[in-house]
Image (tube, rainbow, N blue to C red; front, side, top):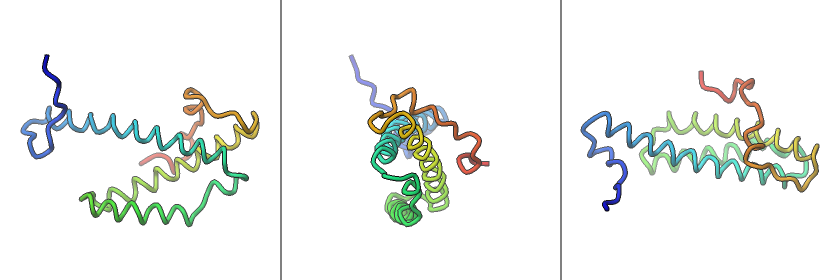
Length: 131
C-alpha cells in the first residue's frame, strides 16, 4: 500500500489539476487553523471582563504589524496579507462580541459548543465580506 504524498509543490505543478489540488489542500489546512483561532476568540470572550474590551485598536495594529513582517519573510504580498488580516480581525471582533453577549446571557461558565460557534450571524455586517 502506497501513501498519498499529498499535493505537489507549486514549482512542480504542470497542470491546473495539480495547482487546484494544492490550493484545495491549503484551504483545508487554513480552515483548520481558523477554527483553532476562533476557539481563542471564544476564550477571549469568556475572559474579558467587559464588552468594551473586545475591540482593542492597539492590539489590532500590533497584529497587523506582525503579520506584515511575517508576510515579508514568507514571500506573501502585503497587498494580500494586510486586507485579509484586517477582514479576519474585524470578523473575529464581531464574532467575539456576539459570543461575549451570549455567554453573559446564559451564564459565565457556558462555553459555546461547536454548533453554537457557528451561530453568530455576521452576514449582515459589511465589514465581514469582501466586495
